[in-house]
Length: 277
Image (tube, rainbow, N blue to C red; front, side):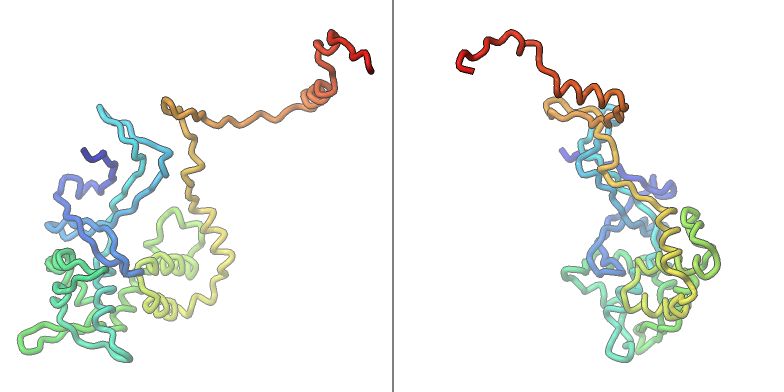
Protein backbone atom coordinates (compact mmCIF):
# COMPACT_ATOMS: atom_id res chain seq x y z
CA UNK A 1 0.00 0.00 0.00
CA UNK A 2 1.38 3.39 -0.98
CA UNK A 3 2.06 5.78 1.87
CA UNK A 4 -0.07 8.90 2.08
CA UNK A 5 1.38 12.23 0.95
CA UNK A 6 0.26 15.70 1.97
CA UNK A 7 -0.37 18.09 -0.93
CA UNK A 8 -1.68 21.66 -0.82
CA UNK A 9 -3.87 22.49 -3.84
CA UNK A 10 -5.54 25.82 -4.79
CA UNK A 11 -9.17 25.91 -3.66
CA UNK A 12 -10.41 26.25 -7.26
CA UNK A 13 -8.77 22.93 -8.20
CA UNK A 14 -9.35 21.00 -4.95
CA UNK A 15 -12.40 19.18 -6.29
CA UNK A 16 -11.18 18.78 -9.86
CA UNK A 17 -9.68 15.84 -11.67
CA UNK A 18 -6.07 16.81 -12.34
CA UNK A 19 -3.94 15.20 -15.02
CA UNK A 20 -0.27 14.66 -14.26
CA UNK A 21 2.08 15.94 -16.98
CA UNK A 22 5.82 15.70 -17.52
CA UNK A 23 6.90 18.86 -19.31
CA UNK A 24 10.37 20.35 -19.85
CA UNK A 25 11.01 23.16 -17.41
CA UNK A 26 11.22 26.40 -19.42
CA UNK A 27 14.53 27.41 -17.81
CA UNK A 28 16.49 24.15 -17.71
CA UNK A 29 14.67 21.94 -20.18
CA UNK A 30 14.71 19.16 -17.57
CA UNK A 31 11.41 17.24 -17.23
CA UNK A 32 9.36 18.52 -14.30
CA UNK A 33 6.05 17.55 -12.72
CA UNK A 34 2.96 19.57 -13.57
CA UNK A 35 -0.74 18.96 -13.06
CA UNK A 36 -3.36 20.23 -15.48
CA UNK A 37 -6.96 21.15 -14.82
CA UNK A 38 -7.78 20.63 -18.48
CA UNK A 39 -11.42 21.68 -18.13
CA UNK A 40 -10.50 25.13 -16.86
CA UNK A 41 -7.16 25.19 -18.71
CA UNK A 42 -5.10 25.78 -15.57
CA UNK A 43 -1.54 24.47 -15.25
CA UNK A 44 -0.12 23.82 -11.80
CA UNK A 45 3.55 23.38 -10.95
CA UNK A 46 4.65 21.29 -8.00
CA UNK A 47 7.20 22.25 -5.37
CA UNK A 48 8.09 19.79 -2.60
CA UNK A 49 9.47 20.72 0.80
CA UNK A 50 11.55 17.74 1.87
CA UNK A 51 12.11 17.49 5.63
CA UNK A 52 14.85 14.85 5.17
CA UNK A 53 13.14 12.34 7.45
CA UNK A 54 12.90 14.79 10.36
CA UNK A 55 9.12 15.08 10.29
CA UNK A 56 6.07 12.84 9.94
CA UNK A 57 2.35 13.48 9.43
CA UNK A 58 -0.38 12.45 11.87
CA UNK A 59 -3.88 12.43 10.43
CA UNK A 60 -7.32 11.21 11.42
CA UNK A 61 -6.67 7.50 11.78
CA UNK A 62 -3.42 7.46 9.82
CA UNK A 63 0.29 8.20 10.23
CA UNK A 64 2.80 8.87 7.47
CA UNK A 65 6.54 8.71 8.09
CA UNK A 66 7.08 10.89 5.01
CA UNK A 67 6.92 14.39 6.47
CA UNK A 68 7.43 16.16 3.15
CA UNK A 69 4.90 18.70 1.89
CA UNK A 70 4.05 19.29 -1.77
CA UNK A 71 2.49 22.56 -2.89
CA UNK A 72 0.72 23.07 -6.22
CA UNK A 73 0.64 26.63 -7.51
CA UNK A 74 -0.73 28.03 -10.80
CA UNK A 75 1.89 28.85 -13.40
CA UNK A 76 1.53 30.60 -16.74
CA UNK A 77 1.67 27.87 -19.44
CA UNK A 78 3.02 30.46 -21.88
CA UNK A 79 6.43 29.99 -20.27
CA UNK A 80 6.25 26.33 -21.31
CA UNK A 81 5.24 27.35 -24.83
CA UNK A 82 8.11 29.83 -25.02
CA UNK A 83 10.62 27.15 -24.05
CA UNK A 84 9.21 24.63 -26.54
CA UNK A 85 8.96 27.08 -29.44
CA UNK A 86 12.45 28.43 -28.78
CA UNK A 87 13.82 24.89 -29.00
CA UNK A 88 12.18 23.96 -32.31
CA UNK A 89 12.11 27.28 -34.19
CA UNK A 90 15.51 28.79 -33.40
CA UNK A 91 17.68 28.45 -36.48
CA UNK A 92 20.93 30.40 -36.65
CA UNK A 93 20.38 34.15 -36.98
CA UNK A 94 16.71 33.80 -37.94
CA UNK A 95 13.63 32.21 -36.47
CA UNK A 96 11.96 29.64 -38.69
CA UNK A 97 8.27 28.89 -39.11
CA UNK A 98 7.23 25.58 -37.58
CA UNK A 99 4.09 23.49 -37.32
CA UNK A 100 3.29 23.61 -33.62
CA UNK A 101 1.41 20.30 -33.84
CA UNK A 102 4.68 18.59 -34.79
CA UNK A 103 5.54 18.76 -31.09
CA UNK A 104 3.01 15.96 -30.55
CA UNK A 105 5.40 13.59 -32.28
CA UNK A 106 8.34 14.40 -30.02
CA UNK A 107 9.34 11.71 -27.54
CA UNK A 108 12.78 11.78 -25.94
CA UNK A 109 14.47 12.33 -22.60
CA UNK A 110 12.93 15.77 -22.15
CA UNK A 111 9.76 15.54 -24.23
CA UNK A 112 6.80 13.32 -23.39
CA UNK A 113 4.42 13.20 -26.36
CA UNK A 114 1.27 12.56 -24.32
CA UNK A 115 2.00 15.44 -21.94
CA UNK A 116 2.79 17.79 -24.84
CA UNK A 117 -0.47 16.79 -26.56
CA UNK A 118 -2.44 17.53 -23.37
CA UNK A 119 -0.88 21.00 -23.25
CA UNK A 120 -1.59 21.68 -26.93
CA UNK A 121 -5.20 20.49 -26.53
CA UNK A 122 -5.92 23.39 -24.17
CA UNK A 123 -7.11 25.51 -27.09
CA UNK A 124 -7.52 28.77 -25.18
CA UNK A 125 -3.96 28.58 -23.85
CA UNK A 126 -2.68 27.74 -27.32
CA UNK A 127 -4.40 30.73 -28.94
CA UNK A 128 -3.09 33.04 -26.23
CA UNK A 129 0.47 31.72 -26.61
CA UNK A 130 0.57 32.08 -30.40
CA UNK A 131 -0.92 35.58 -30.21
CA UNK A 132 1.46 36.79 -27.48
CA UNK A 133 4.70 35.16 -28.65
CA UNK A 134 4.56 34.41 -32.36
CA UNK A 135 4.03 35.56 -35.89
CA UNK A 136 1.35 33.19 -37.20
CA UNK A 137 0.66 32.36 -40.85
CA UNK A 138 -1.56 30.01 -42.78
CA UNK A 139 0.34 28.07 -45.45
CA UNK A 140 -1.62 25.70 -47.67
CA UNK A 141 -4.23 25.21 -44.96
CA UNK A 142 -1.69 24.53 -42.24
CA UNK A 143 -1.09 26.98 -39.42
CA UNK A 144 2.59 27.67 -38.81
CA UNK A 145 4.24 30.01 -36.34
CA UNK A 146 7.62 31.41 -35.46
CA UNK A 147 8.93 33.26 -32.46
CA UNK A 148 8.58 37.04 -32.76
CA UNK A 149 11.27 38.47 -30.43
CA UNK A 150 9.61 41.89 -30.15
CA UNK A 151 6.37 40.27 -29.02
CA UNK A 152 8.16 38.05 -26.53
CA UNK A 153 10.05 40.94 -24.96
CA UNK A 154 6.86 43.04 -24.76
CA UNK A 155 5.10 40.14 -23.01
CA UNK A 156 7.99 39.72 -20.58
CA UNK A 157 7.98 43.45 -19.83
CA UNK A 158 4.34 43.20 -18.83
CA UNK A 159 5.25 40.32 -16.54
CA UNK A 160 7.76 42.62 -14.79
CA UNK A 161 5.12 45.10 -13.65
CA UNK A 162 6.21 46.16 -10.10
CA UNK A 163 2.56 45.90 -9.05
CA UNK A 164 2.94 42.10 -9.29
CA UNK A 165 5.79 42.03 -6.76
CA UNK A 166 4.94 39.68 -3.85
CA UNK A 167 4.19 41.54 -0.63
CA UNK A 168 6.98 39.72 1.21
CA UNK A 169 9.52 41.34 -1.13
CA UNK A 170 8.09 44.83 -0.80
CA UNK A 171 10.99 45.90 1.42
CA UNK A 172 13.45 45.83 -1.49
CA UNK A 173 12.17 49.26 -2.49
CA UNK A 174 10.11 50.69 -5.31
CA UNK A 175 10.62 51.94 -8.83
CA UNK A 176 13.48 50.38 -10.76
CA UNK A 177 14.54 48.20 -7.82
CA UNK A 178 11.07 46.61 -7.62
CA UNK A 179 11.03 46.14 -11.38
CA UNK A 180 14.39 44.43 -11.21
CA UNK A 181 13.11 42.05 -8.53
CA UNK A 182 10.20 41.13 -10.77
CA UNK A 183 12.66 40.50 -13.62
CA UNK A 184 14.68 38.22 -11.34
CA UNK A 185 11.54 36.26 -10.44
CA UNK A 186 10.44 36.00 -14.08
CA UNK A 187 13.93 34.86 -15.13
CA UNK A 188 13.43 31.70 -13.07
CA UNK A 189 11.20 30.54 -15.94
CA UNK A 190 13.40 31.65 -18.84
CA UNK A 191 16.38 30.24 -20.68
CA UNK A 192 19.58 32.25 -20.62
CA UNK A 193 18.81 33.54 -24.12
CA UNK A 194 15.62 35.33 -23.00
CA UNK A 195 17.02 36.40 -19.62
CA UNK A 196 19.74 38.36 -21.42
CA UNK A 197 17.20 40.06 -23.70
CA UNK A 198 14.87 40.88 -20.83
CA UNK A 199 17.61 42.55 -18.79
CA UNK A 200 18.90 44.38 -21.89
CA UNK A 201 15.42 45.82 -22.28
CA UNK A 202 15.83 47.54 -18.91
CA UNK A 203 19.40 48.65 -19.59
CA UNK A 204 20.77 45.91 -17.36
CA UNK A 205 19.28 47.73 -14.34
CA UNK A 206 22.52 49.69 -14.09
CA UNK A 207 20.86 52.17 -11.71
CA UNK A 208 20.18 49.52 -9.06
CA UNK A 209 22.78 48.89 -6.37
CA UNK A 210 22.95 45.11 -6.30
CA UNK A 211 24.46 44.80 -2.82
CA UNK A 212 21.79 47.02 -1.29
CA UNK A 213 18.97 45.10 -2.98
CA UNK A 214 20.51 41.74 -2.06
CA UNK A 215 20.68 42.61 1.64
CA UNK A 216 17.04 43.69 1.72
CA UNK A 217 15.99 40.61 -0.25
CA UNK A 218 17.70 38.30 2.27
CA UNK A 219 16.05 40.15 5.14
CA UNK A 220 12.64 39.83 3.49
CA UNK A 221 12.79 36.12 2.68
CA UNK A 222 14.22 33.64 5.16
CA UNK A 223 14.10 29.92 4.44
CA UNK A 224 14.30 27.49 7.36
CA UNK A 225 16.45 24.42 6.81
CA UNK A 226 15.13 21.09 8.11
CA UNK A 227 17.93 21.13 10.70
CA UNK A 228 16.43 24.25 12.29
CA UNK A 229 13.39 22.29 13.49
CA UNK A 230 13.38 20.37 16.80
CA UNK A 231 13.39 16.62 16.38
CA UNK A 232 10.41 16.22 18.70
CA UNK A 233 9.73 13.09 20.73
CA UNK A 234 12.04 10.24 19.81
CA UNK A 235 10.44 7.22 18.21
CA UNK A 236 10.55 3.98 20.24
CA UNK A 237 13.82 2.18 19.83
CA UNK A 238 15.54 5.06 18.08
CA UNK A 239 17.74 5.79 21.06
CA UNK A 240 17.73 9.49 20.17
CA UNK A 241 16.61 12.34 22.35
CA UNK A 242 15.63 15.88 21.63
CA UNK A 243 18.73 18.07 21.93
CA UNK A 244 18.65 20.42 24.91
CA UNK A 245 20.42 23.73 24.98
CA UNK A 246 22.53 24.13 28.15
CA UNK A 247 21.95 27.15 30.35
CA UNK A 248 25.09 29.32 30.64
CA UNK A 249 26.89 28.80 33.97
CA UNK A 250 27.25 31.62 36.45
CA UNK A 251 30.66 32.79 37.70
CA UNK A 252 30.01 31.12 41.09
CA UNK A 253 29.11 27.80 39.43
CA UNK A 254 32.28 27.93 37.35
CA UNK A 255 34.36 28.61 40.52
CA UNK A 256 32.82 25.67 42.40
CA UNK A 257 33.33 23.38 39.41
CA UNK A 258 37.01 24.37 39.24
CA UNK A 259 37.48 23.73 42.95
CA UNK A 260 35.79 20.32 42.68
CA UNK A 261 38.27 19.22 40.03
CA UNK A 262 41.18 19.96 42.39
CA UNK A 263 39.61 18.37 45.48
CA UNK A 264 40.35 14.75 46.48
CA UNK A 265 37.58 12.20 46.70
CA UNK A 266 36.63 11.09 50.22
CA UNK A 267 37.65 7.48 49.49
CA UNK A 268 41.23 8.59 48.94
CA UNK A 269 41.63 9.21 52.70
CA UNK A 270 40.90 5.55 53.51
CA UNK A 271 43.32 3.96 51.08
CA UNK A 272 46.37 2.23 52.61
CA UNK A 273 49.62 3.90 51.87
CA UNK A 274 52.23 1.98 49.91
CA UNK A 275 55.00 0.94 52.47
CA UNK A 276 57.66 1.45 49.85
CA UNK A 277 56.72 5.09 49.40
